[in-house]
Image (cartoon, rainbow, N blue to C red; front, side, top):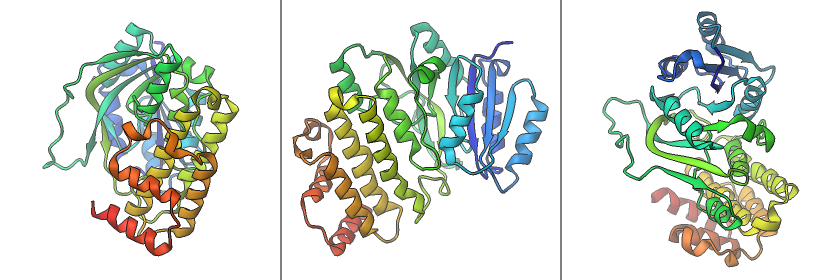
Length: 341
């Protein structure tokens, strides 16, 4: 049977979680035989590869495992998965997460009914603890089809971050990704910012399903939550690459204010919160570089039309640090304030 959806799952030292993830794929109501499961092992050093080998042996018609020669982080693993994917639609699942049994049936139904580039659902932040209380499965908002067919609509689509910046709660048309050369940066954290920003500039039909179908596991050992890890500094590297990519693709001509706003929010403001909440000691030299790179690209950030309407009061205060001579002591005080909120 021809596969309908290729699901790409990067794996690194996830022997504790991979069975839970795979079971949620095995039980998909769309039919497991219609799925192509691509596990990409990013040089795990635990028992992950052995588990994947056993899964492939049990389900050879639907599962392919790929072993990377070197660790390239999730971006590399996902790009490799895209090279092997044979189905017309693409899904991404992180190996410590899991999904509702009807997720891909529902995303596929909307994708084909409305001829979309992207369909997304909502997710839970799930601790996997029996005493937690999850939000209702339905958000209460109406489902909607977005038709991004004018420049003005796209500007709002980009500035509002209408479909967030994660790849995993979505279904993509493979042709849409391939024809627009939408990819992940490799060997870097925060790779999803790069990938997602690109699809904001190309998508013309997007369906938003207001139902929580994806379980995002709040894993303290995950890339984003790891304390005092040097990969957190990748956020600036990724956004410098992204700015250059936007420039190369001509986005700065029509959408400069939107690109600027994304840099201010996804890079500068996210980095400020990251160094406050993930690092024990505020990295002053990194802050100075972050400030310099931001002002180099957006010296007149005050004039950005989206700041007033979309940026919270606290974030507007953080933006004002760009204008001030901040000492290391000042930075520590700012970080302490963010931690206490």
